[in-house]
Length: 51
Image 1 (cartoon, rainbow, N blue to C red):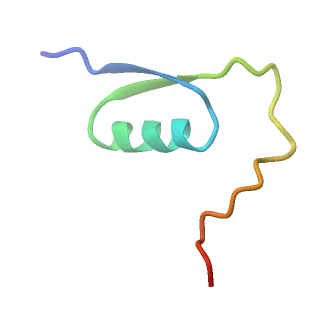
Image 2: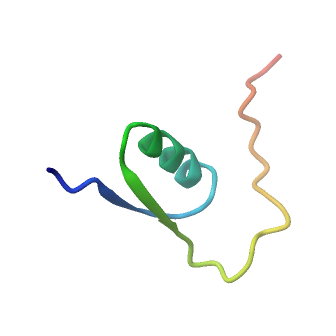
C-alpha cells in the first residue's frame, strides 16, 4: 500500500480546498498554519470576474 498521508502548509483558501479534494480521493491530509489565530479579515480579491 502506498503512503497516502499529505501535509499541506497554509490554511488560506487553497489549503482547506485541496485537503477536501484529497480526502475525497482517499488521501489523509493534514493542514498546518503558522498564524497563531484566525484572521478576522481577508484579502480584497474579486474571484467572480467582471460583470
